[in-house]
Image (tube, rainbow, N blue to C red; front, top):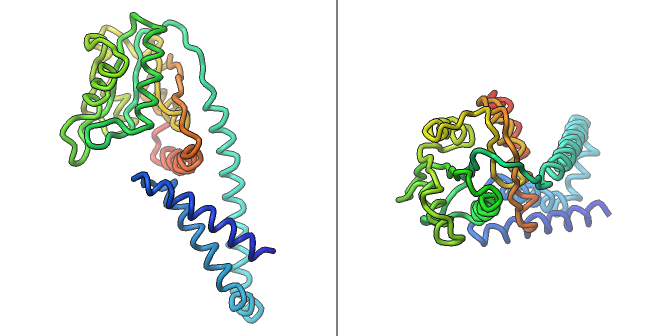
Length: 255
């Protein structure tokens, strides 16, 4: 039964990762299930010699039990984090705000990635609800890219929705969420908006909790979360990546 479960779970994890890789996506939330699935398949394949070795060597048996104990504790913490992410994914209605800030999330060949498109679509809706609030798009120049992320985001908003260019302001130096907030302060200052006034922050649901924590650490005291939905087929892989990103942000004292 255990061997069969390892085969089935391993195949599901590997298939999920390969399917997402076929779309050209690669990040830790995709690579880790691939690695875990491969390990499960190997354990199922070599189950008989492994069980014999565990019976023969006491030290190996203790290490084996400890490894599984650590794995189950990690899995429990991951499930709790997923529950937290689910709560954060609930979209909130926002009041009238002074500005709408759209956090960058990557571009590909001078086009916004699917997750960034959902952020921009959400920003367009928020802009219609707050017609007098300027839109600030954030993101600098990536590796081998010819346009900054902010430029690409502005073009998408103008061409797709359309939103007039005069409503959109670019922050073109940032390469991280922390820098999104840091460098946007200068843009807000030019607009005579301070970081204690109501500002809507738009990012994907899986990224919102960390983004708000970073923003508050940067001194923004009146942020309103507007979450863009993540497609179901990639949601849990993104949550898995965010699990580690959230932890690393805490270790790096970003919050």
